[in-house]
Image 1: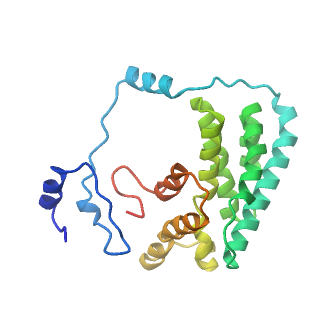
Image 2: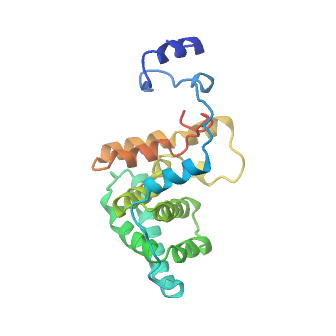
Image 3: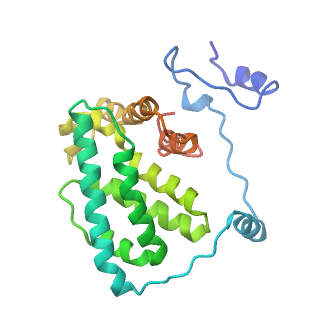
Length: 231
């Protein structure tokens, strides 16, 4: 059992990283995680990294006003599908990735034509359920930011899918916990954090998912200093 910073330091002499199987033991305490502050980069280094990442130069090919009605239809369809999938999971049905990926494509088409339209629609929509609205919103922002970085279509698709799946595990949590407006107790917050594990298990069982998408879902709520979860 590793229970001190000295033991972590000794292990670090022999390997760069380790995997902890939390099904067989406890999660490591945050004060033993050994996170280091990120190295500050110079502006020219950041610019160089950005240039290396960029693969495609996108340009707006559709006027904002013309794209708005298309974006509204895209948002409606994607929100409806996200709500359907979450309710299917709550009812005990197995997750089917194809139900969502089909509606990701029109969303990407809209973002590539003119990203401002779908962002505007997302901002104005007053969804009855925060959960479904949040899933769609994260997916849209992931696609828009990926477009800004100049990622290719395949990478944008992975980003958008990951954004849509980050809270999939919340389908396994009590609805009253998800809908509460008050501050959560310590026990309730611990239960809320378990949605990440639920989501990863759902996706792993479904299969047919790229490892980088699964990794994004597993680490979305982490923070560089260990203050996130499920660490």
